Image 1 (cartoon, helix red, strand yellow):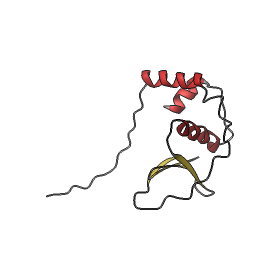
Image 2: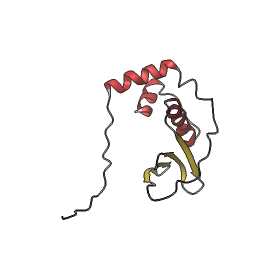
Image 3: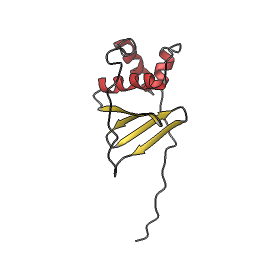
Length: 118
């Protein structure tokens, strides 16, 4: 929803790389009180870490990871702290609020479940 709203609000905005775009999302989530961080590896790309989940985003697509039984990768700080104010200002946040009231997000994310017989 955040990116759909951002695109409608400021369609001509371009980013140097995927990480720069993700840093804006992290700044937004931190502003909302959600504890989210980054992890980054040269061979995989940038991963957003929240709770016991990771969302790896790279040129190949998006991979959602569940770290329930594994340690989270080491996190790193955002390199652009404080530089996202132009999009995270009250005008955009009001636009986002209105946008989420008239749109909805749907996903086909699912996973296989074992058939246990009791």
